[in-house]
Length: 317
Image (cartoon, rainbow, N blue to C red; front, side):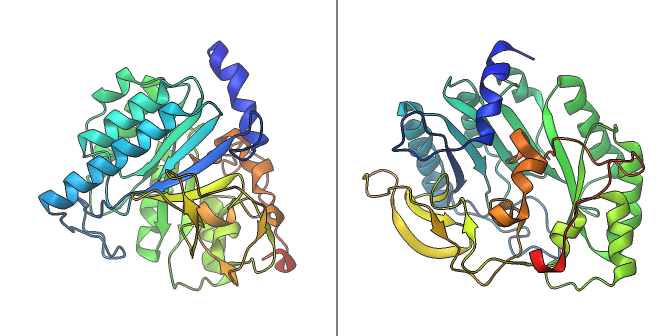
């Protein structure tokens, strides 16, 4: 690991707001892009196409955001969470490379199906860049996907892999866990609207010891949460919200009207990892440490390794 990584990565465990001296701001960025090259039946953006104007607007918004980040003097980490697939667009690949090379950017990650060719990664700083890769059975040949993952390992890319916990995905998820290198974390997202019996949940927990965190929504109303303070959501216009799931506007990134402030969560429940990972009561900052954005736990809870799973009480959900 480089000297840069040794010095910078621990900072991720002590985040601070933008207007604090040396503070670290984490940004979840989601521009207007909504097109995807997959047609997953559980996704509302399957095979959706952006118009040329829509793509130009998304590109301009991303370039504006990248320029804003480049001008900052304080530490920043970024997770791109596009509705569609970003890495099939050249401007997202370029943004990932450029941001990874900025000295004050601690981490830049993206949620992706990684259907793109991997050659562009050779230009990035791999001490900073990371990938959150989702495997979608039925959308990509299994061996081709596995080969892509193995290529990422060979290149030294930091990444996690995951799957939606639908019953029809179970056998393929088991196979993927067996075929991936042990050091690659395989996560499972509870399927939206799906209620898991204890037996069903046990099957998924055999694959991902952290699945209990995803199984049921977390009670969040009035609870301390880092969003709105050290973690914010930003859209293509620069509008700042505390997270993707609370619509209230906190200001704008570009006109200086946003000021970080610790705020209790106003939502009754939080059922998405990129939201509840920032709830203090979950304790997930201790679980993921410097792998929060790319969803890589500090200790990979590989089934059968004796590391155990999360201690989640009903009171904490």
